[in-house]
Image (cartoon, rainbow, N blue to C red; front, side, top):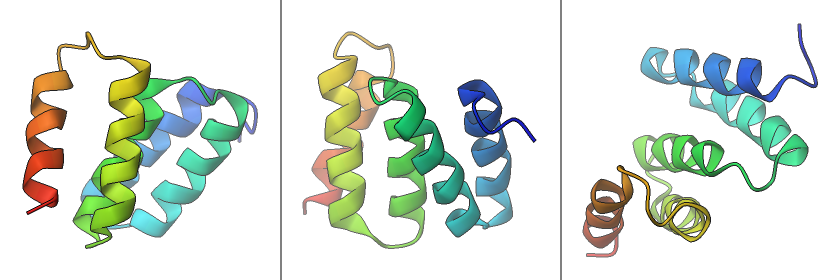
Length: 88
């Protein structure tokens, strides 16, 4: 394994998510966040896992952090819409 490789951890988390292995994905993302706390993509992926497991408030927080870190991202409008829907 590559414990200090953020890209590896992020990609591994994204591979685990469609398998429904969100707890493991979140473990990988937490480790990645520790290594690169300003990496917006980590927060987007965290939001996805939180949303998919019904953890709405945590999803909103993660997505909002993504938007703070990368407000000009091509994904920003999509993430903004997701946050809006989660807050309903």
